[in-house]
Structure formats: C-alpha cells, structure tokens
Length: 369
Image 1 (cartoon, rainbow, N blue to C red):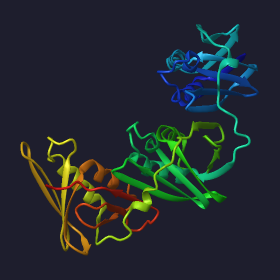
Image 2 (cartoon, helix red, strand yellow; image 1 turned 180 degrees about the vertical axis):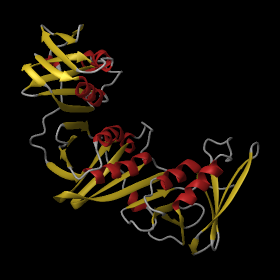
Image 3 (cartoon, helix red, strand yellow; image 1 turned 60 degrees about the vertical axis):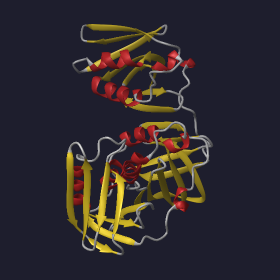
Image 4 (cartoon, rainbow, N blue to C red; image 1 turned 135 degrees about the vertical axis):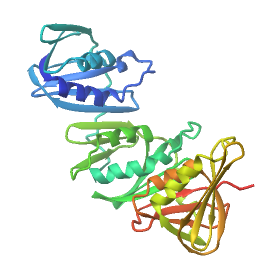
C-alpha cells in the first residue's frame, strides 16, 4: 500500500474515528485503526465492538492495500507534522511514514484480523433525517439519561418511529425529557429501539446544521448512521424501556408562564447559596398570583430570594427542586417563555415551550420539610 495525503485530511480522519477506541479493551488489535487505501480515498475504521466509526478522506493512492496501525502513536505523529503532504507505504505489516526529510516506522497488524463495522445491506428499516433536526433532538434530551449502570436500559435514549414522526425519550428516574420530530422516510409499522447515550454523542459530533440528510439503518440489535463519508455503528441496548409517558399526569392545576432566561438566571444565582450540606442543592419556589419567588438557603453561607414577574393560572403553590435538574430543563427550552405546570408539592412538574409543542421536560420535586 502506498498513498499520499494532506496532513489536514489525515488528522481530521484519525481524530474522528479514534473517538470510538476504548483504552480498556482486552483485544490489542482494537487499540489500532484500520487503514484501507483504494481508488482516490483512504478509509479509516475504529471500533470497540460496541460503537464503531468509519470515515473516508481524499488521498492519492499509488498502490491499494490495508493495514492496522496503533491509533495513539499514529495520531500523535501526524498531529506533530508541521503541515503539507504525507506519504505512507507498507511492507510486511510495517508502515513507513515520510514527509520532507523525516521518516517514521510503525509496526502494524494484519487487517484480516480486524473486526471492522458489520455490514447492514439487508437492514430492516432505513430512516432518513434532516441533520439539523436530529442534532437539535439529541442536544435537547441526552442530558436526562441515567449514568447508573445498575439500570443499563436508562443509559440510552428510547426512539419510537411511526409514519413520518420520531419520538425520543430520555429519563434517569427523576426526570424525563422527550421530543418529537418529523422524518423524511415514511415508516408504516411502529418501531422502538434504545441507542446508548455515548453513541448518540458521537453522532451529534458529526452532524452539522445544514439541509443534508442522514440515514439511519436499523437491524435487530444494531444501528448505523450514515452520511456521505462517515458511518457510525452502534449496538442497541437490550431490554424493555419503561413506558414513562403513561405515568405522567394528564392535567396540571397551576400553570405559570414567565421568561425562560429570567427564570434560569434566577435559579442559577440562587443555587450558589443553596444548602451545600445536602447531596444536591435545593431550590424552593413560591408561586403566587402574579409572580414566582426563587428561594435558597444555606445555614452556613447565607440565603437568596428573587421574585420574578409571571402569569399564573390556578392555585398558589410552594414546591422544591434539585437545582441542577430544574436548571437543566430550562437550558434546553428553545423559547423566550416557559410554561411551568404543577399540581402540588409532591407531584411531577412539567416545563415546556410557550410556542413550540414538540418538546417537554418533566421533573420530580423534592419534599420540603
């Protein structure tokens, strides 16, 4: 194998695929990157068997071939090259990297031993998304997934697709974020699957805010996201995702509308003086006729109290929240005004946009002593 490639393209490809390499693998070959040169491109592949990324970049291929090279060493060598073109040639599972008067030699592995990314030519379902919509969806709900490995199914995002709509749900047991977006492909039968949050974060990184689409290919236990030159593969999480939306209230007794920015800023400021002796920082909200008061108190540090103008329909209420959980929800509302709905001091509260109906966030309150 012999090819020439610009340092810029080479490092871009290496950095992109190397994010799927695990440092704790028991298979030494998985610490490497598979390089395959053919025609006028170089294909780079990396995987930890749970997630894999494949990318093609332009290259001048003089002699096609393939090799697996150690990812960390290869990336660091290419990163430290001052620029320009790089030549890489292989012989007997050894790679010689040259630029200018410099020469580096790396020992490689047999590409036939590399597992690569599974083929999905006969995938059950292909779903086409607008890149911008999918990027926004992931960004708005992924924060609510669980980080507790004792319930693995909650460490992923549940996707349900039917007709031209996709609904995504994330929950950690104390809060729920859900959003519905349209898809380009019509799916006749309702389909549900759970994608690990780690994999979605990698998908989010490759998406750009433009009108180009991305294809999701779904199989029994795996899924691929495909762009023109990048493919992300991931295994699906096994198990039944809880039907959390069925457990939510259908009516709320108090409806409060106020500025999203003002509400978020007041909560962030007040949380600085929330009780630091607890495992979480507690915020108390007093919802009255025309205002919301955000209250925090730390017996050792001091206290905070901010009153915000609001439109309130329903009964007055006092309710407490984990400050982080409340602020996270407000951060992900893409609207100037938030609708904050409550029942009482012990029932789930709902935050949603005043003008956009496809996203809402539910958070459990904290009992006040």
